[in-house]
Length: 463
Ligand code: GLN
Image 1 (cartoon, rainbow, N blue to C red):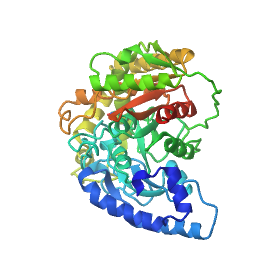
Image 2 (image 1 turned 180 degrees about the horizontal axis):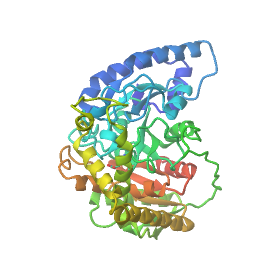
Image 3 (image 1 turned 90 degrees about the horizontal axis):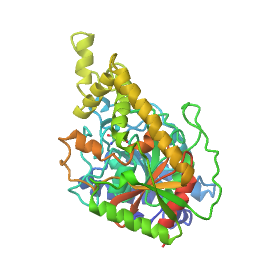
Image 4 (image 1 turned 45 degrees about the vertical axis):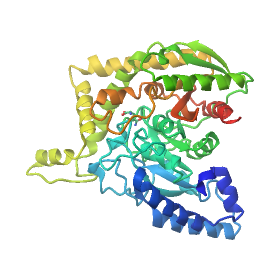
C-alpha cells in the first residue's frame, strides 16, 4: 500500500482512518524484513521504537488532537546522522558499536514533526565513496537492477525510498552523495545551500562541504521535508535562516554549461538530458549556453579539500573517546591498532589529506586548491548574473556494475565530476529522475534559491 503513497496522501489517509499507524508500520516492517534481504538498504532497523511511536500517533488521532505536519510519516536515516539510542556506525568498523547519545538537530526536528524512523541506512564508510561498496558491512543493490550499484555514498537512503521502505529518507552530500544515488535509483534528492540545514549531529567528513538533505519520491515531498529540517541552529554556527525571496518571474532562463556535455559522457545520459531539456522548453523555459570555465579543476580541487578536512575530522577516532578500542602495548601501538579498523579508502584519504596539509606541501596543494575553489565559486556567481538556474546531468554514466570500479579509485572519483563543483561553491542543487532512466537531471541555483529550484523541477513532473 505504501507503493502509491506520497507524504501528503499518506497524511490524508491516516487522518481519515483508512488505516491506523500501528497496522501500517506492522505491514511495513513485514515488507522490509522480506524485501531488504536482497537489497541491503538498512544497517539496522528501529522496529520496536517505530511501532511504539505509531501507537502514540494513533492515540493523538483518536483524541482528535492537533496533528504535527509529518504525523506518522515513515522515514529512513543515513547511518552517519545521530538518532538518540540507536547505533550510528557511519559504515565503519571503528564505530561498529557506537550508540548515539543524542539526536542530531534534523532528527529533533523530524521527531517534533511526528515523523517515525524506520531504520538507519547503509553508506560508504564515513560517506567516502559513490557506490556503497566502501561500506565496512555490506553493499546495497540497486532496486532497479540488482547487479548494479545504487550510487553513493547515500545509496542505502536512495534504495530505501526507491523500494518503498519509507516515504522519505535523509542523506548527506559532500560531493554528490545525495544527488548521484538519487539519480541512480530514480528518486528525488536535494543538496541544500551550505548552511541551510544544521549539521549538528552529522558525523563530519569535510565540514566546509557537508550538507544534510532529503531524498523522496517526488519534488513536493522533497520540499515538505526541506521546510521542516532547514533553519538556523544555535548548535551549528554555519547554519543560517533563509530569508531571500525570489521574485516571481514569468520566464525562467536556464544555462547549460558547455564544459559538461563533453566526451566521457555516456550516450544514454546525453540523450536523456537532451529530451528533458526539450520537455522544459515546451513548458516555456528558455535555454542558453553558458561557461563554467574552471570545471576541469573541480575534481582535483574537491579531492584535496575533502581529504584535508577528512584527515583532520577523523583524527578524533582514537578509540579512547568514540567507538571501538584495541588495546596495544603502549599508546602508539593502541592508536595504530585502533585506527587499523579504518577501511582502505578511508586510510587512503587520511594519508592524502595529511600529505596536502603538511609543511612544504600546504602552499602547493591545499592553498592552491582553496584559490581554485574561489574561482569555481566565481564561475557560478558570474553565470547567475545571466541565468536563473543551471541544468546538467547528475553523473556522466548510468549505474555501474557492483565490483566494476572498486579496484580503481580514480574511476570511482570520476563519477562525481558533475556534482562536486556545487559543494565547492556552496550552492543548492536537486536531482530529479528523467526519461525513466537511472540518471538524474541536476538543477543548480544561486545560494538559497531552493524555492525556485522546487518550482522549476515540478514543471517536469506536471504532464
Ligand atoms: N563520492 C564523493 C566522495 O567520495 C562524494 C561523497 C559525498 O558526497 N559524501 O567523496
